[in-house]
Image 1 (cartoon, rainbow, N blue to C red):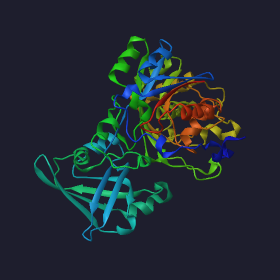
Image 2: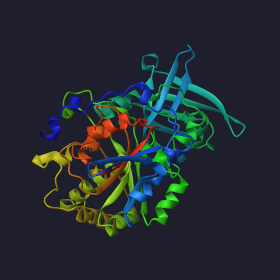
Image 3: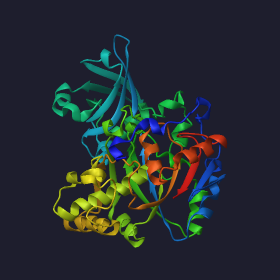
Image 4: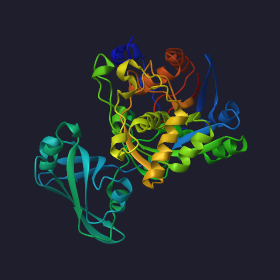
Length: 418
């Protein structure tokens, strides 16, 4: 079956609420690890991961950091409005955004939208002993200019009356860490630590790259002792990662856009490993596999602008390719094209975005082994896993269900070797 016409109903399984881990393990690396090795299944504890990996392999992590993206304002009428930061609008660069002082703008999801058609919301609080007023106002003109491109997000202008305070400091003071909706509980103080990977660095995600939550400093040190090479990329995880596929065929599902940053030295390390990697999490997969298509685009458009390198969700399946190599271009050549492009433009890092959808029929170009959690039924992440194990996902999930594995963000992990 052509990938676009896959029926999402074929990727359903029974997931009872009591199988969803509401909280993490007391010790991150003592979660369970399912090992799928070329069709054979076994289980272990996560801290034993290094023993299953080939010496000299390259492991790629997503170093994004979850921001306290949920804010609440109360109108004078008493109505509570939730403003959920989704994507920086002005400035659009994440690093610049968090350093802004005085004003900035975001594309946001808005809770209780019908109660906030117009007018300004205000919230007063203290930072470093000084009183501060944060204001939020919807920008309807910008919404109309963006049209359908903004999806269900709305442009919100923020301003505050202390130019010495950055927006990052404001979020630390009044923002709330957005834990997944299926946990069905309020964010707790402990989530500020447990819902971040130990190697998180670059602020920008509204959801954690959860496969990385199992790693500890001890496990990372063990990987180093075993000769596993490590590298980091950045993909800022959007709330769209939780968006269910509601169309009967996946052709009707619109993938969310996520922003990536990959440094030149990371690309060079990929080349030294012949572009074969172990990916930690589906976000690392989406980043690495998107790089291939960016490099392919540069083959014919070597003078392309950065924004032209965006990967549309159906690019891998155009012209009947259904996920195969494009024009015989291999991953090494594609990554070399990106390095050459960076050199021509005097850049040290690639900043771009991706909507890639990876589903059965897709042939992986760069990722050879995958560490990932157990995903929701009928989700694009389950499609990605199925593509990786050549359709053998149900065998893996049946094993996890029958061997008391914990599911979703705070749940257990798996190592997939196709």
